[in-house]
Image (cartoon, rainbow, N blue to C red; front, side, top):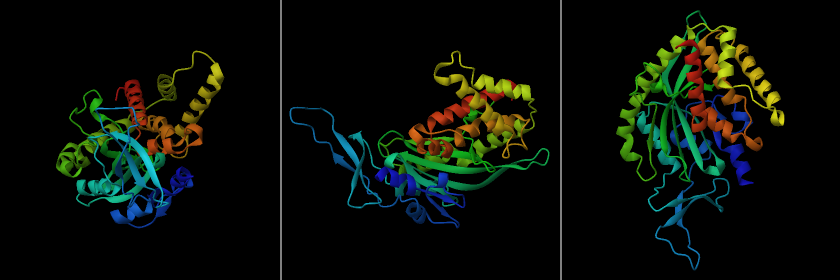
Length: 335
């Protein structure tokens, strides 16, 4: 029951409809403390509790439970994970203070939430920088965010990432731009701190690594401008789709029907209401392929949490897949 409550109340978003009808919408700029309250992230009192070794067993290592006070029932303690003796606790308040400190308080909180029963926590700050792609009057806009996230079970480090989001469809374009041919390999999109270190002592290093978003976004702007000016024919687009998703070799368990549904969906997104102004360009092709990952796939067993993680920009598997799709588009049009 607690897990269901978290899915319903542990997400908050600025001015946008709550994700899949879940969470809280707020319409004015809020403080960091208020952001934590809206997403029910405050006063968890995350702590370590010693794991008792059963009688008859011995170990040279010490392990601890990571526990929290349930935000919806203060009488309940939740166990979030088991960690080693070097693991250091990070309160949600410290994670959000870390985000504030990186920007010297210059950002505006946009989203915040937790998934997986409180094991993973995230927040995003809107930055002032905006990219406008307007070669023929389409005025396609991309906003920039700083995403901070971590886990309370040791599965994810403390992370800060520069995250571009296309405005019209909320498509997150978390791309590793330093890996392309002719690109600046010194670009840092994200910064990570292990849970064996303190976040407060790494603020300056994080600022330097991220370059306060400017270097990464300069490279992103350059790539996006190139891609929106690169014409793509329908045949080229379908070739991209086939390269990205090859036809199944065997029709096991309805594989061909599932494959055709995927292809039909990508074609619809490509020419649909959010992408019709950029269809026929490499930029439109990239956004059609990546938008499917953010907003048009089902989580396992009907869960929305995996989709939320991908759309928010902190699912490493989704980010890796988006970068693979970027390479497919680049290779097809030599961008």
